[in-house]
Length: 355
Image 1 (cartoon, rainbow, N blue to C red):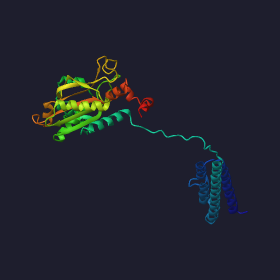
Image 2: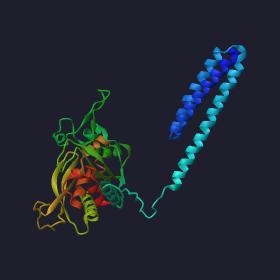
Image 3: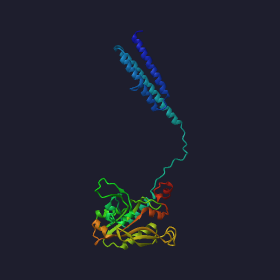
Image 4: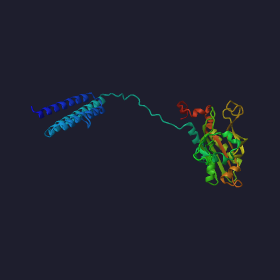
C-alpha cells in the first residue's frame, strides 16, 4: 500500500467516525429545532465534517486533492440523507401522536367574557344625551392648561382667595417667561377657549378630567366634571333654572324638585348652589340628606361680566349662565355609592354590577 492509499484510508475512517457520531446525535434529538442544531454542528458551514474536509484538502498533495474532495462530498451527501430521513421520521412521529390524541368534545368551551363601559362613562354619555336634547354640544379641551385660561380669564387673579379652594398641580415650563402651566382644576377653561374662538350664541357642555389636591372617601386628586355654558341675548336666571330642572328630572326621575341657594363663585354673579329634593326619603329626613330633605348637587350662576371682558363679549348685549357638577358625585347619588375611590380601584366585583 502506497502513501496516497494510506492517507485516503485514514481520511475515510475519520469521515466514518464523524458520520457515526452524527447519526447517534440525530437519533437523540426529539424536535426539529434540535435536529437542525445537530446538523449544523456536523454538516454546516462550520461543522466538523466540513472542517475535516478543509484540513485534508490543505494537507493533500495536488494529485490527491480530487480524491479527498470526492470522499468529503460523499460524507456530506450521506450526512444530508441521514438528516432528511431523521426529519421525516420525526414528523411522522408527531403526526401519529396527533392522530392518537383523544379529545372529549362534550367538555364545554371556554366562553369569552365581554367587556362593558365603566359606570362613569355610562353616566357621562347619558348626561351628554340629556343636554343634547336641549341643544347643547359637547366641547373638549386640554388637561394641561395655562394660568390665564384656568384662573385669570375666570376672574381669579393671582392674589384672589378663591384660588385656595382649587389648589392644584403646577408644571414646570421650558420657558419661564411663558404663562405658568397647571393641571386644570375644572373644565371651565374649555368655556373660555370656546368663547375666544366663536361669537354668541354659545351652548356647550364640557365633560372631562380635572385635578386638585384632595384625597378622601368623597374627594380624589383626579375626578371628572361636567360643566355647561349658555350665552345669547336675553338669557336669564329663569332659563338657568328651567334647564337645571329639566336635567334633574330626566336624570333622577320625574317629580324631583330643586331649590337654588345664594352662594359665591368668582366667575358668576349672581351665584347659587343647587339642591334637589332627597329621593331617598322624599324630604322626610335621612342620613343621605343629613336630615335636611335636600341634597346639594351642583353650583351655577349668571356669567360675570368680567369673564365676558376677557373673551371680548359685550356684556351689555349678551348674558349667559354656567353650571358645573362632579360626574362621580352624580353617579354616587344615583346609585348609592358611598366611597369615591371605588370608581378607580379596578375591582371587577364592583364594576361588573353596572354592566
